[in-house]
Image (cartoon, rainbow, N blue to C red; front, side, top):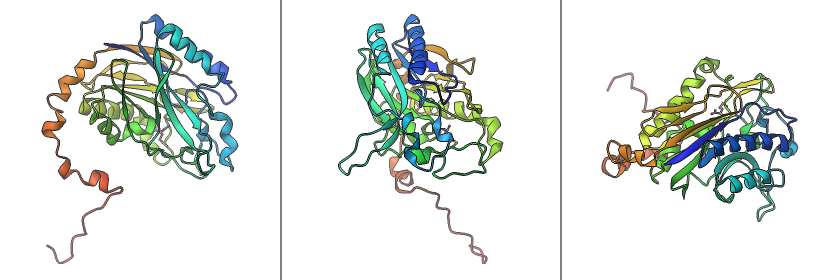
Length: 317
Ligand code: CDT
């Protein structure tokens, strides 16, 4: 049994200081401790505004939104609280690494998992980076994640922590079935996903009204098809004029939503997650060892884009 909190955040303005944001996170952590939570999940980029909505000519123009150490002195109080309260957390933030062997620093959209002793036990760097690289002035706001973050090649690793097998994914990752299956194949029992999802999707605004539906659709399917709990946590509300989806939720291995946020602001929702319920699915319908057919799934890893069959010949078959 794991008591899990999803700590949804409302908007963070571009001039909100790290200490002010950390105060909000600490308040949610303390509420979660009051609710007897073992683990709290915060959203993607939980320390800053969603800065990829603005273009800077020089990529380093946004470096003040990145963390160069974790925890740095401004974030340390959150880790101290975790240790004192005996509660773990997952936290998304922008990571700027130190120089590698070639002197290059790297930017990742990162989530860490911190245990009840306040120790970082796992790190995940976002794999599926959405949006675009260059300024697209026709959009009402930009989605320049592909300018400000590298795609991680580290994949979807799972970790023995909090008495179970847990994994992480970030925002756009939740739309890709491979995310869940990679972790499902490692026996994952709880997947933590933070997100910032603007309601307006400029390339196809017809999808705007479906954002909430798609959000739940993908996470519920991922939970059910892999027999795992999924915790989806938003930074929602209207941030710097851009409305983002809230609807944070906790999903059981049955695919059913067992808790959902009612507001678009800072809000904690909780659920008592029985990790053994994963077996109901992992050992029956989705008994991978018995029923999967990887020998006929080769396109999944050998091919990236769509390859259609050859066109029909005008002479017929
Ligand atoms: N942060 C993030 O990954 N957001 C994306 C928006 C997609 S539109 C560019 C998401 O999948 O919700």
